[in-house]
Image (cartoon, rainbow, N blue to C red; front, side, top):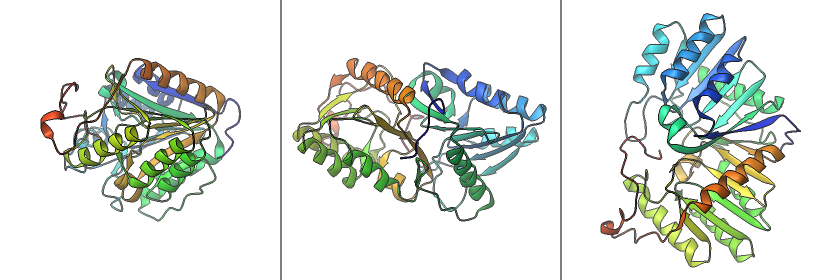
Length: 332
């Protein structure tokens, strides 16, 4: 893991920090903004980008054209940005979905987030974003952006603390889980990967205290229900403590190890996130970031209830105690 250094990283927590925390980043730009986003549906963010453009900042935006289910969430934003003179492109065709959520301000700082730039994720969901000023990390986010912008090959340096898909993200996540010696706290909405499931259970078997905070069925697609429910049931069988979060919609992707280091970003624990999509996460041991992540996880854990996932093959039980279904909130 790359050493971030004191003061070089800080954490954004949604919904507490809200859209204003992202607007502040955009408003700080003096030369260049590079935005790569799965979903842009916020007039507040769009207006901040326009203000940057009007004060002479070069604004480049890449938007994912459609979800895995075919929904085109960004057509309106694409047309709006283009009509106001901003450079906007669809993300690289090398990936069926670009799920990355990143923003680079000048060459000074980069935001690597789990949240989309859409109003729902500023007000209703638990999400995280790390703002880093560590130069190697910022330069690599820029390199990844430019490669996708120009449709060229990009091979990341895995020593910068960034976690890229589709490269070695499964191995990096597995390494992080394997490193746990005392505690392993995981806050993820779905679990659709046997390798990571095996690593979590192995951590429990070697004496690590494991907590898994899920969102139940809410936002899980029909094709991911089977693996997610089965994985949650298997973990409970091996003694992992599983709870369901309901006071906020769970969209965060967080792994906390021994209260000392963490990983967050765009990728779910999901085969397609590891193997097919463009995703970006970040590892951190910055004390101020880890401390706030711990406090937020603890806050959410205390407000959650023990959860026994239903039989994935019995749909009649799947809706019990769930939040009201939201067709526009799906973990892609």
